[in-house]
Image: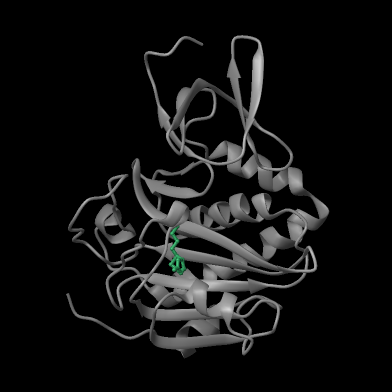
Amino acid sequence: MELTAFNIEEFDLKLDTEIIGRNFIYIDEVESTNSLLLNSNEYKDHGTVLFAEQQTKGRGRLNRDWRSARELNLTFSILLKDNLNNLNLINLGAAVAIAQSINNFYQLDVTLKWPNDVLINDKKTAGILLESSSKSNKIEKVVVGIGVNVNQTAFNGEYRIKPTSIKRECKETVSRERLLSELLNNFEEMINDLESNKEKVLEEWKSRSKHLGEKIKIEEGSQNKFGVFYDIDEEGYLLLKNNDNIERITFGDVSLTPNQPK
Ligand code: BTN
């Protein structure tokens, strides 16, 4: 597979946002775009996007690694300083924006797994790591880190969910530049919707949900919980129904359990 560096001009031509990505920083190699945006005072503007061709210590949710081949995928982080009202909804909304962008180019079966995995044909193609820093008990900045497997076709090693990429599923090379601009366009629209019409974002998420209405298992650290994925509440938490009891789940890994009672 021939590697081609990201073409910023091509990306910029299709970027249709007011704020998100207007300050675009391209880095060849970094430990983690999330860590850099979170820990550096160099990047201050709301909507700044930090993009890296390669991460040497890419991080995933729950202290996992995020491995991504050089120049084939999208690994970037978005800095948010305004509209920080509901971080869970930003998380879900980011997953919606990724799914929409893939579907705007390819008719693939893109579904979402709570809280923020993006699957194609039941395999993982993208993940989101949302992190924040606070000052005097007030959230000062939020970093939305996004990794999308775009043109990588070989995945070696152990993965919790079977990985895939858009190219593996649609059998053609994907323009990373067009995909990223589309993704940021959708992301900005989603952030605006969260201010004016958060129901729209929740409905979009639910309509793409892989497990809503199904019997599921939630792994919260070493503890397992079982029930039916009943709904998502207005703050983006999962509602797990077990007999007449509804429990609000704030984190964990969801999987199907066909043998559990409803
Ligand atoms: C997950 O699925 O667990 C989340 C993966 C998030 C990966 C992205 S890649 C860009 C940003 N920088 C990181 O170190 N992680 C996120």
